[in-house]
Image (cartoon, rainbow, N blue to C red):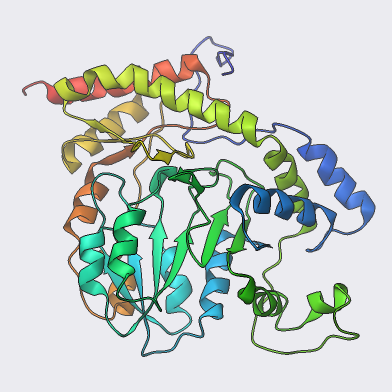
Length: 396
């Protein structure tokens, strides 16, 4: 890791942000090359290169680069031709995009609770939600650690027509049982937002894992036309064929993404180093000070997207958050459970109980985590955290 200390001119330590993006390879060269080539819209040379890397890493039949993970989820929802009698099961502990993409296509939502080990969908609660109205299940690999895929597959065994969709915004290059995350569902989506391991500012991708979906997905992706078939020489002209939208990522942003993906081994090794440094600094104190660290089950490979801790309750979490910020370190919390939100209640097929989601939401704290976070800064973050927890542990 980068050992550079950051001080302001007065000698005081600069605040440590929650996230900071870094140029790690040929990002600026590739952006210039994209502009000079004159093809800055979607579907250019860099889009093809980025898509090829993603296909090689995930085994996808086709990769469609999109403007965001949200738009990739929206494209997957379009593929299902959803209607008002259909329901889609979504974990309550996730970002709004996992749900709104399907609500905007007319489906009703069923919110599933999470299990406390990986913070992924709870198979037992999932099983209780499945019925003949369910068209799809969205799973999230929280923090880049695979959810309980075995349990989920067992729950779905009686419902073979339910489409499995991976919201893999956190999990690119993570694994489950040796299989890449993003290869486990009919569709999977990726995020290249500035907070993710690999970024182009804003971007995403839809992974198609069944070849039979490719032709229609290309039409929906390209504003309802068969333009891609024309570009591939499969037809002699193209025209409007279906519904769809303008989902394509600019080739200039794909140029930035390509440079990041070319450095994927380097990026992941740095993120793993940050994760393991945090783990070594904090694990010895977890039992005595009453906090928990994330668990990585032995059959799963982490994507090292974040480092989170679980405090004993919401009051302690908020106190630690405030104390660390006062010390110049900027952690943050995460999702407010969707089932309890105004939008969640509006689009739900029926109310569901998600007590684990509510508890985890109040206890979870994410520590600063980015590619060039130095060992010195990790030590400073860990010290600020331990100091805050220790003060909170003392009797008043």
